[in-house]
Length: 542
Image (cartoon, rainbow, N blue to C red; front, side, top):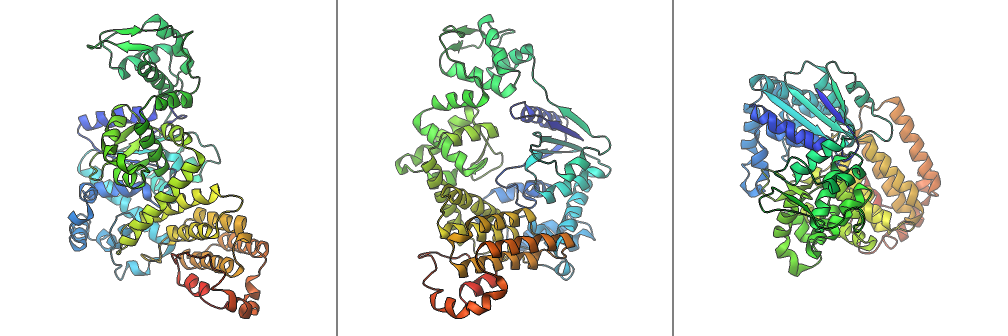
């Protein structure tokens, strides 16, 4: 097992791309997945593409849903690849596949953490089985964005005898290192590779390769400014592209020569940070290309063409988006996801996403997040069977939270309600599986939102949301440890006192709230109800 550790731009992704290409040339089956800040609280989101490929379902699920086999055939396909013991746990795979598999007599009684632990064990067993059949390599990028359950699965996978190659990458952890990662670093036969700055000579080789030059060395004028990149591969690459695009340097038609068109150390202003270099490259794009890239950055690290077209503000230019995405792909800003029928893309680095997002005006960001959230709500309303619920709830919580934070110190009550309820839905997914494991991180976010903005909500609505959060947590997080109870009790009592009502005294105020409950609700608000308790409390006299 190998772990690549280094700051942004140090070449982790390039090394992984090279490693995976080499492994495929050697006949290994390569399974890849990447962590994402948007989905960092979505349980086992990272492992979904791995599981799909293990069962040979990646190409099937990349097609439009209308082209999928019916669920019975999909379940039969899963069962045909499992042994006589594992086949009884097929319903557990609903957590990592976009299909709903009805519980059987065995899985119906499995709840809480035990459910996820058994699923993790089954995934590990499948990986071991596939690795014994043929050489296997698993690549997981951006360890810093893994959710806690994914880290548990990874630790279980790495702690046992591994008949496969496991490659991980991560930025250094800014906050406290998760306990699972500390244990992972002590696993036997782990090789930790700390990426350091490149030498000037290595930077020269990188520029030659990225510009596809047929030369052995660069002009001395260009070599003099390479140290400004401080050995950072991404900075070096972006600086070279920037000089080429602004006309300071040029390459001959046959790539056999590189010419300097103007002094590089006097008449041209060179950016001193990675972000500034990328920013200058983006500024040289056409207006439409810039807008496509910036809107994509608001959607997230991974985005699809359909969503981009839906929220693109200039309707007359939507027909050009496909060509613009192709151009941005060729220029190295984004990369198309292989085997995706929906034209899905990812940013080539998080730094490019961050810079593009920063180029949006504040008002543009908020409008985009709201439009994206409403687009996802439209998709959710059409998803009558709940296949997309697990995927959409965290995205809805994220985008509505961006809208809410932008309205601080006085966000609209309807937005607060949406954020809290989508966070509840993201963790419990009550409409699909009331026994789903709940991420404590998401519930901490719930209480943070309620505590911060409680005074902006009508009292009965504060009470309804609090009961919803507490009730969902009690219902889904079983069995509770003593520390869970203590934490929940502390948070709930703190919130209750801060929002000027006590749960224990709610019945005494029933008569006054009865007459005003309907009139004090925010006008025009459509409530996505996460639990029966919230539906009861919003419409009752409590």
